[in-house]
Image (tube, rainbow, N blue to C red; front, side, top):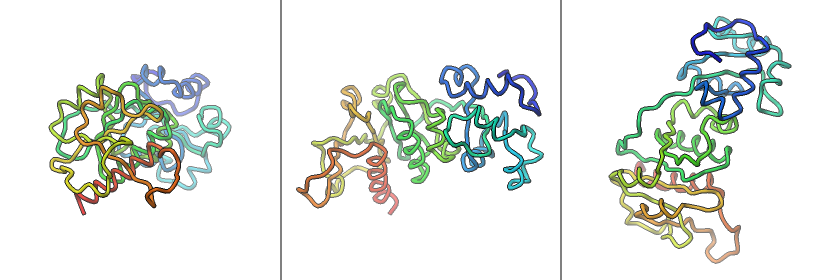
Amino acid sequence: MDNNISCPTVLTAALRKSIASLGNARERRATSQFVAEGTRCVMELLPHMPCRHLLATDAWLEEHPSLRRHESLIKVTYADIRRMSQQEMPQQVMAVYEIPQHAEFKYSGAMVLALDNIQNPGNLGTIIRLADWFGITDMIASRGTVDAFNPKVVQATMGALARVKVHYVDSLADTLKLIPAPVYGTFLDGRDLYSTKDLPLTPAPVIVMGNEGAGISDAVEQTVSERLRIPSFPPGRATSESLNVAMATGIIVSELSRRIYG
């Protein structure tokens, strides 16, 4: 898609093909555009990001009449949406947005999440949604982390990308070294998250979450100042081998937020 052309009012075969291609990371980079699907995601992002195309069926527009005059609206059939969608059972609306160009990350003194090669789109989307819930507005991620504008990530965020910035950096370890804040990471040999009472929380920490299989990489581990562990309950009981990275993120951020703001 050409960013310089005016928004069409009808869905052409070429445009339909172009929108469908945004499931591919190379196309998203080339066009600086991404797709959001479903009412929740589309409506959350609409006030915050430039919308190139709002594609909706008549049935959806009957429920959202205020958008009938939206400047980027293209009325489509559900069959059109199925041909463009990345989902097995798409809803009646989707939209193409411009990928935001965030300023270079600068630590502000607030809590930050750092992601070390997170691979699963659902995990990243859930972590972004968690960040939004707990008021974390900035995340830094290694280049090996899945693209935040991957359709599956966008869907899992449920619109949280409107408020959370994901900054990709060439070297996560080097970036962490420059942040004047404690850096926390989770390890099997770490200190108990709940019984450790002397954690430095001023300024707010950076919380590193590692790859689903390999954990935190060696280079990033060298930047960690506080090694923490999420205990299972009751102590000593046989449990699952580990927690999903998104689940673990929620537990850690919740406990640290309670200590900082509670």
